Image (tube, rainbow, N blue to C red; front, top):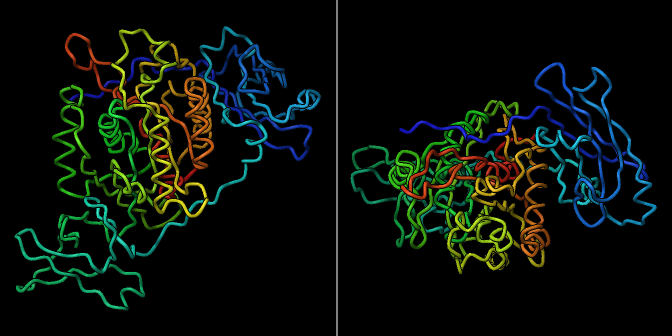
Length: 496
C-alpha cells in the first residue's frame, strides 16, 4: 500500500479572520461578528476593512468602505462584534449589495486566511437567510419500499427474496400484517434443513442480484454522480471512498463498510489499487458502470442519542429516468473545459477539448430529468440538494486562478459535524469563480436549484508526470465536502 503524501502547497496562515454578517433589528444597520486567531501570543495583524459593491463581490479597490477595525495593543485575538451603518448604501439607492472583508495592509493578505460568509449572496439575501433550517427527522422504522442498486427498480420490502450462498432457489421472507404495522422488515425464512437464508435478492426476474445486507434495515440514500467524461468521475469517487474510510471517517466518528462483496472487490481491483498503489490514471469508463454500495454508520453520540444512525449509501451514475430516485446530486465540472479558464491556463497544462463536456447543456438535462421524475411536483423546484463541484482545482491553484490564502488551500476539516462557517466561505468563493468563468451556468444553478452549493476538489492533488504518465503522489483534497453537504441536508450527519 502506498503511503499517503500531504499536499505540498497547503496554506499555513499567520492569522485567521472569521467573520459573519447578522441582522441588527434596524434596517439602517447590520452587525458584524468576527474572530481573530493567531499561532502565537503576539501578532502584527493590522486589522481588516469591510467593503461593499452593488453589482457583485467587491475587490480591494471597489465599492465603498462600510467598516474598518484595527486591534488595540494586546487585543488582536478573540471574539469581537460591531454595528455597521448602511447609510452609505442607502444614500446611493442600492437595492442590493455585496460585502467582503480585506486586510488593512495589502502585504498581509497573502499570509492571512479570511473565512467569509457566502459572498455569492447579496447582503439582503444573506441577512434574511440567517434562520436555522429544520433538518429532516431520522426515520426509526425499517423502509417500507426498497430500491435495488443494480436495476434501480423500486419494490415493497415484503417482496424481497432470500437465499443462501449455495444456489438455493430464492423465496420470500416471513412477513405478517403485524410486522407491517410495527414497521419491521421481513424475517429470513428457513430452508428444508432448517437453516436460515440470509442472502438477500432483488425479486425482479431481469435482475435477480444480491442486495446490500442492510437494505431492509436502514434507509437508502442514492447519490447521483453526474459529469462529462473529462470531469474525472472515476478518480473522484475513488478518492472520496478513500477519504471516507480514513481521515473523514475519523473526524465524524463514522464507519464505511462495503454493503456487497462485488463493491469491495470492484473498488479494490478497478479503482484503489490502480490509483493509490500504482499511481496511474484510471481508464475511461465505457457505458454506465454498476453502482458502489456501502453501509455508512455515524456515532449516535453526535446527536446525544444511544443508537447509531446507519444508512445504505449508493453512489451511482444515472441514465435517463434513473435520476428520479436520487436523494442528492453531485455535479462534477472540469474547469479546464471552460473556455474562459482555458484562456488563463498555459496550453501545456490543458487537456483536449471534450465536445460533449458543455456543463450548461448537461445541467439542463439534469433539470429536465428531475422535472420528469418524482423529485419535482407540479411547478415546484427540485426538492433534492445538488452540489456543484469544480474538479482538478490543483491545476487552477498552481497557475494562480485560486489564491493560496483562500479556505480551499487550507487543511481545515469538518470535525464531528458539518461546519456551516466553512461551508459559507467555500460556497461563496467557488460561486465567485463560477460566476466569473461561466456566468450562464452560475445563473442556471441559482435560478433552477434552490438547494445548491458550489465546491472545489482535487482527486489526486497533482498532475501526472508528462514523461512517465505516473502521478508523483496521490493526495486527495476537499473531495468529501460535496457529499458531506448532502449528508447534512438529508439529516445523516449533524450541522454546526
